Image (cartoon, rainbow, N blue to C red):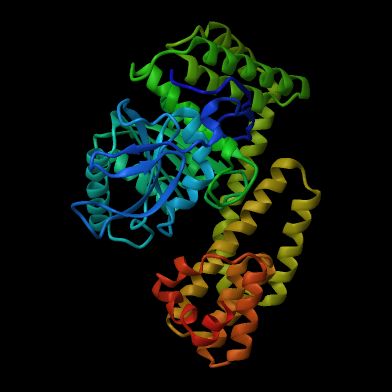
Length: 467
C-alpha cells in the first residue's frame, strides 16, 4: 500500500454512533513541497497546489479544480476522487482535505459546473466530459476512480457510481438516496453524516439496509450538523476506500497499517465496554468485521459480536434509540405543517421545550432534539424561498420570524430578511440585514449570485457598495 502514514490512532464507532479519529502526519508528503511536472497536454503544472477554473480541452464549458499530491510524477498511476458540491464549489472540499490527498496519494478533482438544480441529463453530460478530460490530462489509475459529494452532491456522487462503470466507490457526505430492501450496489459505499444533520435519517436508512443485507461498507458519524465533514472523518472514509482496494486486489496489502488500525479499534471497544455502552461497542465490532473480513482473521471479533448481541442491556439501548427515532419522524411531519399553520407564540413555546431537551436531556434525546431544530430550519428556508420567489410577502415574513427563532445564528435568516425588504423597497433594512448576515459569517456571495433567487439581492447597487 502506498501510504505515507507512520502513525494513526483510531477510536471508531460504526453505523449510528460517533467516531473520533486522532491522526499524526509525519511523512514527507505532508511537507507541501511543490514539484513541477508536465501533464499529458505538455503543460507545466505543480504538485501540492490547488488549481481552480481549469477548462476541459474538448469541452470549454466544463470547468474544474484539481490538486495533485506530492507523489504525483506523471509516471506512476494514482487513484482519483471526483468531488461534487451543491453550489458547484468543490474546490472548498479539495482545499479542506488536500493533506489527505498527500497522505494517501490521490488526485483530487472538483466540478465547478455540477450543482443542485441541474437537470439529470445535463449533470450526467458534464460529468462524462469531466471524466474524459481527467483521463486524457493526468496519469491516473483507471481501476481506482471514486466520487465524493456533500448534500445534493452526495446524491449525484451515488448516481454517477450507479451509471458509470468506471466509478468503483462513493463517499456520500450529509445525504443519501432511498435504498430499497432488494438494492444491490455495484460500487463500494462510504456514508458520512453528522449526528445533528437534518439528513441523518436518510443516511441511517442506507446504513440499516446495507447492514441487514450484509454488504461491505463504511459508516462514519461525527459530532456536527449539515456540512462537509471534519478532516478526521474524511480520513476514515479514505481508509475505507483503501481497504476496499486491498480486498479487490487493486492495491497491495500493508500488514503493519492494517494491524495498527485493528489494534486501535480494539482499544475503542474496550473503552465502550468499560462505560457500559454496549450499543457503540457492538457497532464498532460490526464495522471491524466488515473492514477486516477476507484480509485479516475475524473469528475473535465475530465471537465477541455474538456475545454482546445477547446482552439484555444492548437490547434496551437499541429499543430506546429506535423509539426516539420513530418520535423524530413523527415530529418532523407535524412541525412542517406547523410552520404553515401555527402562530409565533406557539412556536416560542415549542422551541423552548426543544432547547431544554438539547441542553438538559440525555445524550440521544439531545441529538434527536437538535436534529429536529435543524430540520425545521431547513424546511423554513425552503418554504421562505418559495414564498419570496412568488412574492407572497406576508407568508414569507411569518416564516422568517420562525426561522430566526429556530436558528438565530444562521446567516441565511438575515439574507431572507434582506430579500424580503428588497421586495418592499426598504433599502435601509435590506442593507442592515445583509450586513448582519456578513457578521455571522456569510462569505458565499459569488455562489449565491449564480442562483436566480438571490441574483437581484446580490447585484443590488447598495449591496455591491457594501463589498
